[in-house]
Length: 421
Image 1 (cartoon, helix red, strand yellow):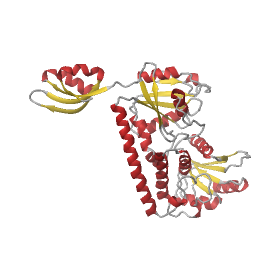
Image 2: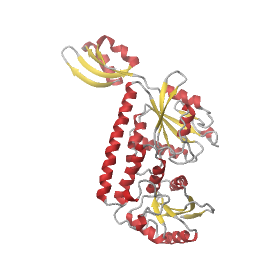
Image 3: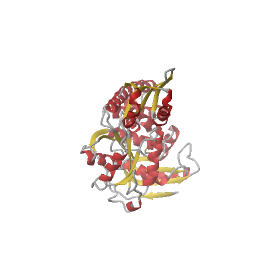
Image 4: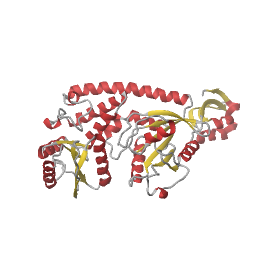
């Protein structure tokens, strides 16, 4: 366990971070993320208190000794806000607020606050509000003055008191209304994706840890003009731009919301429709900040989240970004699907474009065919290399509806009865 103190003359909110190290995850990396989240929200971290415990204290989050240290620190340093690196229960939040005498929020509320200030589109704002309402429902019981949003500051942005401190019935009614609106928007987004597929548009989603440089890469490749800041979650709303590859083919590049370790499940659920852009993409560009000592760990976190979203089988190109400022970039691997670039200076981008071209999906066609039993080899080929949509055995042969790569369609021309796409 240790205590870290920083001197600052900033006039912004003074923040104390509390963390419990149970050895279940990389505590140091998590605390550094929390520090960056506070900075993104506009606060200044005055100190960090970490306590190593077998398990989190169910009543006060940290032990009584560390609680006393935190109380003294808050008093001496005139702390405005305490942020805990876990999701607090109502009991823990109430106990901490009473003992420390300042506002106390948890990791989830902090991320929600950043989302609330960063969401620009109608859908993004709806998603943030829905996530806040879900959090509110889980934590409303027993909350008193410590949950008040009237004072302002970090953790208070978004829908506010009128929507988060009313009774459960009102919250559920509002929640249901938001879900209906999001379903409608999700359906519209799905229709757009279907149209893109029907028109043969190949999509390439830029995914990865927050602040890895995804928006900068999109801007460099397409002049998209997307906000690119040195902050976590600078991009919440997906942006799409067309990109022409050197070989003449085109892809639709999509910038997505950044990943983060221990992203609360309710946030994954709330932003599911946005994250589906990654799930539905033909190619994934997985960015990592090469200058970050935790780059490899964050790549693994990103891959785990992609797996949770069901996108682990997509063609994936690992992109080490910011290699112009990375001291050990020469140690990072380079292969067909792994490239090193600087999105800011343009170094390495030709290799990236070549990698996208090499992973370009083959265009497909859906057709119906009547295969005679003498062509059993073709039927076997379909089962191994195509998507069988329908299959019916008859006296004259096998009637199939299948989807194959257009380059292989010639095999079935003598037997095609109806080509659909």
